[in-house]
Length: 501
Image (tube, rainbow, N blue to C red; front, side):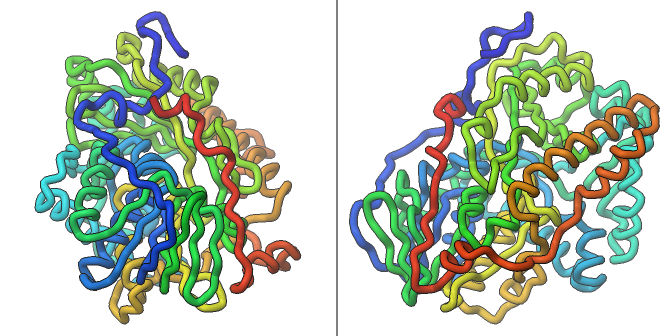
């Protein structure tokens, strides 16, 4: 447990779950028999819930089963910092990969999804503090703001200059409480949410739509037959179509093993401190982040707490989810130190909650929808790379259209594709990732100090977005991806219980 002089003993638990009295676990029903379904969704986070809901709304007569390994929202969907935005920060990547028209199409679809999300929350009476007043990114030096140049140029190229506004050093400091601010970037279509309450509300809406939800039912085996078979620890689902929406745990699927890094993101929450947040300039519905690659992020909660987190931490070797992804005392200590350094006024704010969770990080940085298996009846959505709250609605909608065989604009989205990039095989993947990440941090630290990074670190930083060809598959990869065999999905013992409550 962490203390820092101003703090009571911080609870190793998720504030969104255990600290907000509006959140309720609800009754859990595990799968203990064999059931038949038109569509089986694996994963009860945002992607799976939005996908299941979309299938029922597009095909009301479809029999839909949703499986969740723990409880709906227990993974990244209920553990994140509550940033909500579309995919506009990926515009330069989209233009390079899809062209101007393709990039515009993906952008507009992601922004429409934000509107649809707001409508679903409002019409479904979901109490989750969803508030889209814009987002704020603050760079603490000129070098950290350099990537805005390409982003702003991309926005101009597609005719959407309204997406971003650059603000001065003075305004950035006043709106963030960061005295080291060099400049700021406002994102028009963004905001914040209490993520666990959003997941709780979607769970209710999905059940009301007629989806059969089975929690405490982890997938242990997937048979890519026709129909497909999803086995759990105590039952199984025989389904015409399967939708895989289990986030980081999908790295256990052989075809996806070389497409994802599994890294953690850790978060802390303070005691209620509305006066401090007023002093910092933080407003409800306007989340904050810095401009680092190892990004710091935060928001002001409805009850006046400061939630602050950082991406990065121990890698899961070979795509494994490990206990340190849920709780790492060293990571939490560094995050609190970073918060105090970036926002000096927070020295008086007591940290009462600390938690973490795994993130499915794709080398290209954005999510996609794909299909695996000889019979082409197993579909997946993955790769959010730390930005999943908003895009999960779009990916869920694409998954629903693909699973239903609809010939609409969602099924033909540029995001419905083969994996856009591949990673090296282990141990090169983990060794390279650790080396590059350390180099990125060295570069960003020196740049913030007004110093030039050393030559070697600059060269290594260039590996941040480099992918490799798919290449030759290993024997076990060929074996497990066959349609007739059951690819075993191994879990690393589940989450570390210290990371929940």
